[in-house]
Image (cartoon, rainbow, N blue to C red; front, side, top):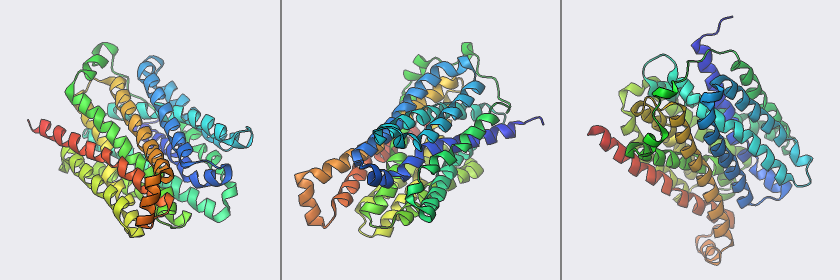
Length: 410
């Protein structure tokens, strides 16, 4: 059977689902890791930092070598890295003397795959024939969110139904998706890459004020999205006092569904609102959602803030990527790579900073005094403080989006 570009789109969709698996499965198991292996919040934060730090390295390597090696072979290798890392996540903690070391090794492997996927999928989609690139980009990015929601929903229900002792089977089962998609990328048609002589030079991009603002927006987007999504499950359980099942479903699962809805709706009706204006509105809503999650004393209202944060961050990443690609149409893989690196810096910084602040507040003398005055447990105050500090990122995004919107009107 001859495959069409529609099959390419579906392979890209499942590429983002694979990335959603490697980014969101481990945080669902944070409570399990704490109980089984005695890990601290800071160690969990380092796992997130290691994941996205490795993705940054993969982004840099992909930016330099993808066009030389070819998109097809790099896409296949990326998915195989994801699959191997996921399988080892369920194996190494029970084989190595130090379970945390096993989790770290697995995180590095699947993060390498996730980073390469991130750099490759967007330019593949951008190069496909068709109009309204912002809509197409938002639609394909929505599958990251559908993947995230599926990971949260299916994994949570399986752990609840069968026992948390079966957690090691989850990453092995989820590894089937990148394995299958590696096979798909051996066959789907791909558009030729932009010739090197026609590409915008990296130095030209980095000297552009517009591109610098795009880099700041990607850092802020990644931080705002991941600080909330990676910690929302633990935040719901420890800071709000709900069960793990309810916390996962009303926290990260609802967050992902809201984010998917935003991206899908913009993918269907994006021509009705300019992307720069949409980014300003998204950033403003994100600030409100963070404030609601942190300051609300009503648990389900705070959870609603977590979930609706998914609506606010849904357009940030794909909107920034597509608008920047439109402004620099000959940027090639380097443009997408630099944006991915910036986004991953945010993805690693936001959750890590949240965990670090949480641990620091819980162990500080003034934190103990504040806990007593506010009648909060150490975990409640710590996670609220961590998310409050992370709220600086949506504020930064709001400022950058407003500047960019003004520039677009000039």
